[in-house]
Image (tube, rainbow, N blue to C red; front, side, top):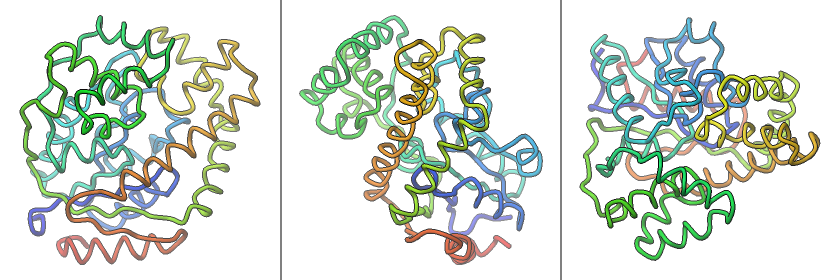
Length: 308
C-alpha cells in the first residue's frame, strides 16, 4: 500500500481524549499498525496507570513501542526516535499504513521536526542532578538551563526528566542541546490533533483516575516497586509517582488520589499548550464525543486516499 504524498498519519492530543480507543477502532477498518508515541507505555508492567491497550487488543492490532523495556531501564528521546523510525520503516515495508498515536509531544516533535544529536546519558551525573531536583525542586536546574538557552528551557517545560537530561548535556559538553548538531527527520507527517472542550475532558479525567484506582493501580505500583527497587524514569509517570509516595508514607491514600487527579489535569493543560503550537501539516478536531470518529475517518480518507 503506497503512502499518499509520502506522509505518515499522526493521531495526537491531550491525555484522556480517546486516542487509543479511536486508533483501535480505526485499525479494525483497514490495514493499519499502531506505533506508540507514549513515554510510559514503553515500559512493561505499567499498564493501569498508562491506560495501555490490553494484550487481546494488541494481538488484534499490531502495536509497536509498547512493552519494550523493563521499568528499571532508562530511555531517551534519541533512543525512542531510532526505534520508532525503524518500526515505521518496517510497517511500510510490509505494505501497511503506520499510524503514530500518542500524547508525548516531545516524541512526536522529535520524529517530525528532527532531533539534536545528543551524547549518551551519564548515569552518575544524572543521579546527582536527580538528588538536587528532589531536594530543591526543578527551578534551580531550570534556571541554570534558561540562563544558557531560553529555547531549551521552553522546550523542556516543567518535565523533570527533560530538565535533568538537558542540564546534564550542558554540564558535560559546555553547550545546551539546541546548540548541538541536528538530525533531520526521515519521514513526513500529517497530524490530526484531538482538541476537546476542557469541561468534557476534565470529566473524563476524573472518571479515568477513579477507574485506575478501582482497577488496582495501588497493587500495580506496589508490585513494581518490589520487583524493581531502582526505576527512576518509570516512576516519574503520573499515577506511579503519587502512589509510590503513598506507599512510602508521604501522604494518605485519599491525598494520593487527589494528587494523581491534579497531576493529570495539569499534564493535560500542558499538552494543550504544547500542541497549540504544533508545526507542520496539522488539523485540529474541536469538541468532544462521537464527533471524533467521523472527523478522524474523513481526515484520513482525505489525506490518505490509499486507506480504506
